[in-house]
Length: 74
Image (cartoon, rainbow, N blue to C red):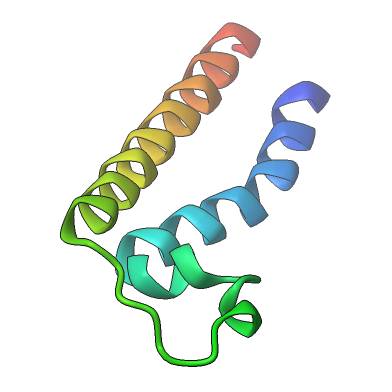
């Protein structure tokens, strides 16, 4: 049971980052790299869609792993 609790606690920041990436993909793409540009960079629509899809996929995968870990402990 401690494995499930530790995994859940460690996955909270990952959930937060993936949720933030899904809601604000442009901000997520430029996070940590905005200072390298003099002007506001243009982010392509394909990159925005890629970030949204991978964030949603990551949320689903982590949720499934947590669910299966929880079921294995019962």
